[in-house]
Every structure is written in structure tokens, then in C-alpha cells.
Image 1 (tube, helix red, strand yellow):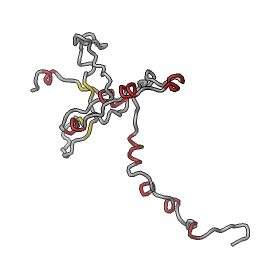
Image 2 (tube, one colour):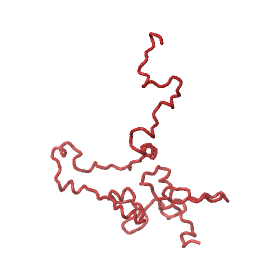
Image 3 (spheres, helix red, strand yellow):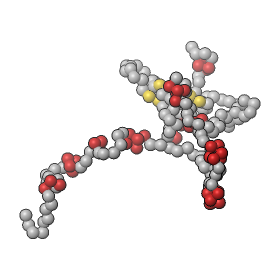
Amino acid sequence: MSAGESQGNGVYQPPADAEPGDWQPDMENALDEPDLDDTLDTGYSPPDRPRAVTRHGTTAGEQREGETLDQRLAQEEPEPDPSAAADGGSEASPDEDLGEPVATGRDDRGEDVTADPGGDRSTAGRERAGRMTAPEEQRPVRHISVVARDAGIDGGAASAEEAAVHVIETEDEGRGGA
């Protein structure tokens, strides 16, 4: 060992011939939350709407005044019913979970007011599709068609591409199926 070369305690030094991957910590075994990598891979897209700009306390004067208990109770949002999803009911959209009205594309009389005046369902479906997953059973590929099932909307955190997929009923399905 030369005088210009410093050496620490050998316990804390990586072996000289070791690859970097051999001595770097594995993130799966690190002391953090389990499945943290899965959460980061999944991601979350927040809804594009203002949340609290109309609520009390957005200005300095309102913050100094404070708010009454009645005002705070009026802002509470009900918890979603976990038994409704467990009973096989459809998942509620994020807007329904927040107690906010959902835009249905219909006016008070029930008439369609979307941008499709003729109601041509062949251009775009009215119902949003969920996540497409491959069926569990393995089928032999006999033709070019792809078989998938609708797994439902995954918590409403779909990408723009997934949210753009809509269900289009064919004429046979609209008449009760063939």
C-alpha cells in the first residue's frame, strides 16, 4: 500500500474485483414500503378540475376569520360504500365517489345533447370501456381476431389512450344479440 492511497476499515469497502451490481443494495429488499415500485410504475393521473377554489379559506381574510363547525360539516364528502363494489355492483366513477354530478351528455328532458346530433353510434360509443385483459384460459390462435375481456375501470386512473376506448354496439348486439 502506498502512502498516497488511503484505506478504510475493510468491512465497509467493496471487494476490488466485485461488479457494481454485486455490492449495490437491491431495491426489492430495501427498508421501504413493500410494493413501492409497483405503485410508482402504476402512476396516478389526478382529475383535471379545480378542487377547493370555491371553498371557504382561500383568501387571507377568510383564513383569519376561520369557519364555523356547520361550514366544515357541510364540506364533508361521504365515504364510498365498500359493500356496493363487493356485491358485484359497477365501480363508481371518481366523480360519483366525490359526490359531484357526472356529465351524462343529456339535458333535463333526457335528450342527447352531445356533439353527435344524429346520434350515429358507429362513430364513437357512448359507454367507456375499462381495462382490457387477456382471458385466463389459453386458446389456440385460429384467426387474426384478438380476444380480451373488460376488467372494469381501474380506479379511474386510466391514461388518455385507455380513457379514449369506448364500447360500440353492433347492430346484432343492439337487437338482443344473435
